[in-house]
Each structure stands twice: as structure tokens, then as C-alpha cells.
Image (cartoon, rainbow, N blue to C red; front, top):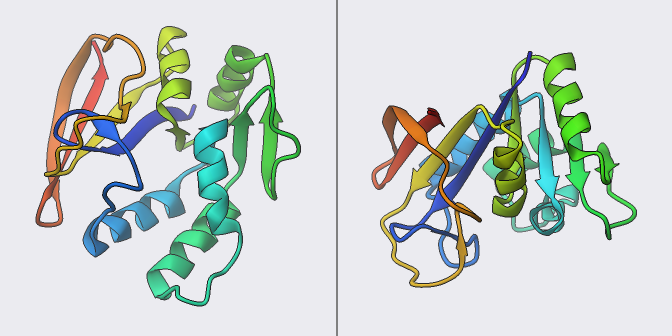
Length: 176
């Protein structure tokens, strides 16, 4: 049975915004390894459209960017959207049957399935489907933006904390 994991970079004041701060090389390499080992990803529309960047090679990329793109392209993706059509390569559109689809994915697959996007994570949290939350805490304060938790914070239990690179702490929580 697969484990559904919601993990994102977060500012000290609780916001996620890939345009305001980016992971260091060390943290990016950590994400490459994560992507290489994932059984797939479930995306909300907004974050999926951002991640489509990795569908095409870019001349300024180095080895790390090519490695991440290869891992991202290889894994299956399920995109939750009522408005987006079509989706890109190796992606399946999920419409109104979110709970049924995700329960089936968890039952049919092994390993970790990434959840990407705070709004989607909120919906899956309400359905009791997220098995683990990973907050990659960066030493920046944004003061505004999209919060990591799109709704009330669910009851959580801290099970691990790791230093990733020089400045980032990964906090791992399970539903309480």
C-alpha cells in the first residue's frame, strides 16, 4: 500500500512560494532523490501548471536540473482539476472522483506518492488520506502568500526532524 506524503518548502511564517525563495543545491539534490524514488505525484491544477516547466529541456540547465526533469517525467502524475484539459505526458486527469481515485492509488501502488499543492492537500486532509506531512522550513520571512495549510491545521504528531543542507530543517509529522 502506498503512503501519501504532502511536503513543500515553507517560510518561517508559514508560506509556500517558489518564486520568493528557492532550495539550495543541497536541498535540490535531496528533492532529486525524493523524485527518483516516488511512486507518483498527485497535483492540484496550479502547482501542476508550474511543474510543467520540467516537461521541456532548457539550455541553462546543469546536471541536477536534467536529473530532476528525468525523474519528474518518468513518474506517473494525477492532476486534480475541473478546468484543465488536456494534461501533459505521463499524466492522468482526475475530475470529481478525488477520494475514490486516491484511495485506489494508495491500494494499488507501493512506495510514496507525493501530494503537491496546499489546496489539494487540504482536501485530502479532510478526507483523512494524507499519511505524512513534510515541512522544509527555510530561514526566510515572506509576510504574505499561500499558506502551507490551506485550512485549519490538522492535529499532528512530530515524528522526525532533520537538517537538510546548511539552513533547512525538515519537520516530519503524522496525523495525530
